[in-house]
Length: 291
Length: 252
Image (tube, rainbow over all chains, first blue to last red; front, top):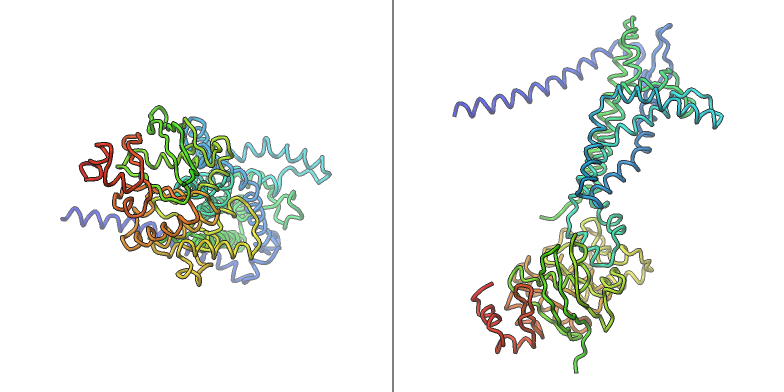
C-alpha cells in the first residue's frame, strides 16, 4: 500500500518538474526580453533594423529568415518524405530493402546537426555557388536557399516515419472495398489510403516544420549570417535561431543582450503558434469513426 | 429453363503451398440466390474471392482452373473490369469514412475516375439507394458522412455502392454476420428483391439464412464441394452424409 502511494507520488513529482522547467523557461524568456520590449515596444517584432553600434534592434529580418527557410525546406522535402512513406507503407511493407531504408531514414534524424552543417559548407555551398554562377546570380553560395536545402534533408525523417505508420494503419477492409469496385492500386492509394491517413500525415509535416523552425547549428553554418531582410532566396540571411547562436557571445550591451532574448521569445511564440494551429488542423481532419 | 451466368471449372486456390480449394466446378443460375454454406475455414470466402479476382491481391495467392462469366474467362479479362461486373459486399460494413453517403454510393465511379454528369450521378445514387432499401432513411443526409449510420444501414450503403456499378453478379461474403437480427431480416428481405435484377452468390455459415433465402445451395467442407443442388433438396434429402451431419448440427 505504502509502495503504491510512493510510486504514484514520484510520478507526479516527475511530471511537476517538467512542467516547472517549461514555465521557468517561458518566464525567463519573458523577463529577459522585457528591457528590449520596453525600449522598442511591439514594433520590435516588425522592425527590420538590427544595428548593434547604435543599439537599434528589430526582429523582422530573422522572422522572415526563419519562415522562408522553414517553408522552403518543407516544400522541398515533402515529395521525398511522402514518396518514402508511400513506398514503405504500401508497396514494400516487409523485406530487407524496406527495413534498410527504414533504418536509414531514422539514422538521418540521429546524425548531429553540426555534421550536416559541415557537409553543407563543404559540398552544398560550392554546389549552390556554381549554380548561381551559371544562372548569373551573385554567387554567395551561402544563403536562404542553401540553408533550406540542408534543412529539407534533415526534416525528412519526421514526416516519413509518421506518415508511413499511418499509411500502414489504413484498414485493409477499406482498401478491399475499393479494389472490389474495380480500382487499381494507384487509385486505391490516391483516393482511399491517403485521404484516410491525411491527419496523421499532417501531424508528421507539423513535426518536420517544428524541427525546421528551431534548427540552429546547421542553418547557422550555411545561411551567411546577414542581418538584413534577404533580397531573394539566394541571398545570405539569418534565422531567429541562427542570430542568437551567432551573436550571443558578442552581445555586450544590455539592450543588445535583451534583444537577442526577445528573439528567442519570438521563436518560442512562433513555434507554439504553429503547434497549436497544426493541432487544430489535425483535429479538423481526423476522421470520426463510429464505434 | 434457367441460364447459367457464372461458372467455375476445376477451380483450385492456394495460399503459398497450401491448397485451400480443391477443384471446384459449380454453375450459378441467373437471377437466383446461390448460398455457399459450410463451417468456418472451409474455403467459402476464398471461393467467392476467386470469382471476382480478389483472391490474387493476397501475397502468394494462386488460382488454377477457370471462372467463366457468360462464357468468358475472367482470368483473361482486366481484373478491374471483372470486379466491376462482379460486385462484392463484405462481412464487416466498410463504407469509406472519408466520403459522404452520396460519394460512397458513386465511389466506384470516383475511384475509377469515370466522369458522371450531375443528373446521371443523382440518378445512380437515388436508384442504388432505393434498390438497397436505404433511400428513405438517408435521403435528407446524402451529403453527410456515412459513419453515423447504424451497422445495418452501413451494410445497405455498401450494397448500394456495389449496385451502383450495375454488376451482373453480386457476391455477399457473410453480409449479416456482424449485424443484429432485425438488420439481418431487412437484408434478407432485400436479397429477395435484388435477385430480380442481379444474380446473387451468398456466403454464409448461417444454415437458417441459406434455407430461407437461397434457391440453390452448395455445401463446402475442407476446401471440397461436397454437395450442390436446389436448396429444398439439399436441406430435405441431402445425398452426402457430411451435408446431413452439418445441417443437423453435428459439427461446424
